[in-house]
Image (tube, rainbow, N blue to C red; front, side, top):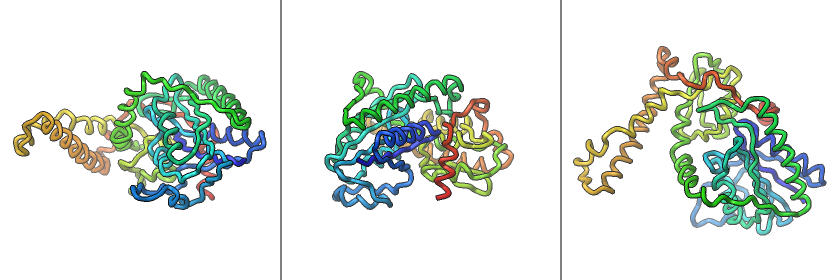
Length: 350
């Protein structure tokens, strides 16, 4: 049996798990191939098309033999899989009877929410049978609001997770199944949070990234971005709304120049509190509560778009850059899993 291990990682935790899974399966006689999800060109959704027609649309051939195994390793973002992972799994070509495993990573004491349940459904839609699901506690890597895990605790969590990966690999090699129980009482609340983050939150948070005056313009952030959401204007990086929110750029920056901008966040919060209904409700004839709510929502969206342009224009002004990069996370530690920077460099050389 041959195993394909598809992975996506922001700070290297999920990559570390995927690499350990590959080695552990190889030690048990199962040929394994590590394949980064971001390297595939996900086909567009087509209502009338069969999944089978998308088999070669990824830019590389995906094995669909029934006697194979697919393992998916990725982090939990706001109780769900990252958008890039969810889209990848939603467009997988049909592979009837092919076994699959989902191994998610999350911060210590975290909760995976609907991550495993939704991933299992995605795999079932493509004909795959999920035989194993797991959520591993790893060091915190979300650096927008707080710092990374203390080094000693990070090492302890990492080693414990890797030991668990070896156990999971043993189950897969022996043909045993293990499905992590779903905490049903938390699914409803986490569904709302994850849906809001995927639809709007990650885009706004992405636009709040800023490079401080210590930025050297090396371009590593843009070169390493899995969504190509960072563009270099001159020697300064700028983030687009397509940002995945994976934190890879902030964790990789060699001088720690990438920060979460407080002024930008305030700029995006302001439209929420503006009286859009009072300003435009009478002009649009919105009298009912539903119509007024719709006017308010449209105002918030359009106001946020306008603010995005204002923020970018302000960042282009040299004298304002220092203000725009003001952040409470300037002294926070970053978290980069051992070997992840080297892995990205190796992939770029290929």
